[in-house]
Image (cartoon, rainbow, N blue to C red; front, side, top):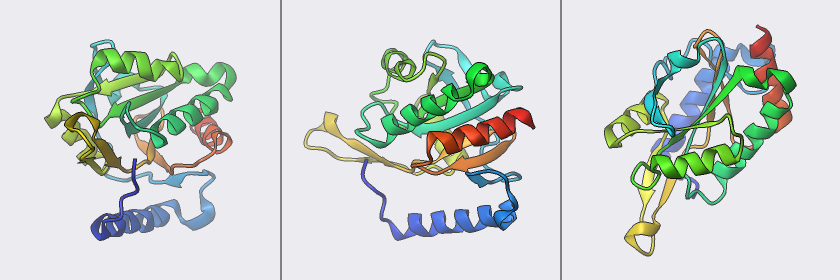
Length: 199
């Protein structure tokens, strides 16, 4: 994945971070990630999991839900994020079962259910890959304000995807609570997950 350098995207990200800081009450939040409680993002997510079962956020009510966007051909950011999330969840011990990680593909042309079923659980057997057609994928990225754009490769099959690399964390009540930036450590994410589990 290449970094997105579009001025419009940069301005949008800056505006998002400013709004997030306002919502967080500066340094009063106990979280390591960005507290976005009350944000209008992430109100719904309706896709199909890698087992062929239709899924929505409501299916996981009572659990802390972690949503991350990416694609299986991603060379660095996506596998790093999933690996770090797996480490963070394992740090919760027995409470790991109270957290559900969802990996939403932004590349439905290549990321078929069979591939997601092989790729996503390789990081953690409890993780679920989610997919949809082009329209459903667009609806999901728009709802979460995720940038995703195909970048041509040397052949039509070797394109890459430019995309934002934030991770979204929902409380047990189904409300979006946190945005974790790429590079957040497993310890930091585990701390945030524990706070939401205990709240």
